[in-house]
Length: 229
Image (cartoon, rainbow, N blue to C red; front, side, top):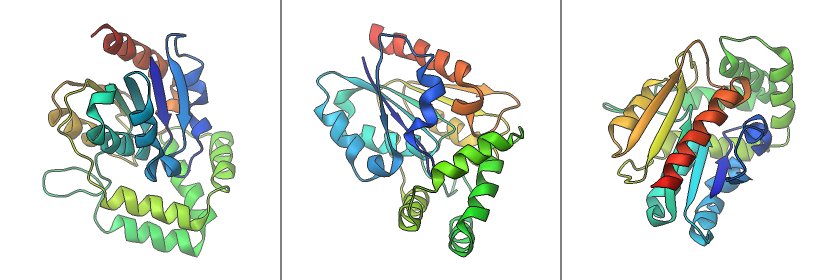
C-alpha cells in the first residue's frame, strides 16, 4: 500500500522520520514536503499512483491532504490527519485561531523571522520543554525563503479544505495543542462520513516528534483497516 506523508508549515519532510521507523513493511512510504504539496505535487502523486493510496498529513500537511483528497477521491483508500485542521482561521461554527492571528504572525515574521519561529516551535512543543528539538526545528526552518513561509501562511488562513469525503479518515490530536485546537479534529470528524478521532492526553502539537510510537502504531492499525476494506 502506497503511503504519502506530508510535512507541516516551516518543517522539512524528515519531520516524519521517527514515525517512519514504526511503520510496517506493508506500507510503501514516501515523504512529501509541504511547500511542494501546496503547489500541487501531492495531487499529482495521488493521481499518478498505480494503486489506491493513504495520505497522512501533520498540521498544514493534513489541510493539504484534505484538499487533495477532495480532488482525487477515487485514488484514495484513507486519510490520516495529525494535529490538523480544515482551515487555520475560525469562521462561524468552524474552530480555529482568530482571524487577526495570520496578519499578526506575518508582521512578526517579517520583523524577525528567527525570533518568531523559535517562539512558534516552543509553542508547538508545549507542554514539553526541549531545547534540542526546538533548535533542530529552527535550523531546518532556515532552508525556507520568506516568500515560501508567507505563501504557506496565506494558504493555511485562506484555504477551506472540503469535508465531504467518503474515504475512511482518522484524526489524531494532542489535548494540550496550543497551535491548532483539538476541536479542529472534532470538527473534521463530525463533518466526514467515515471518521474516528484519537486524543492524546498531556501532549501538544508535535505528536510525530514526541509521540512517534503512538502515531506510528495508530497509522499501522488504520492502514490495516484500509487495506482490508
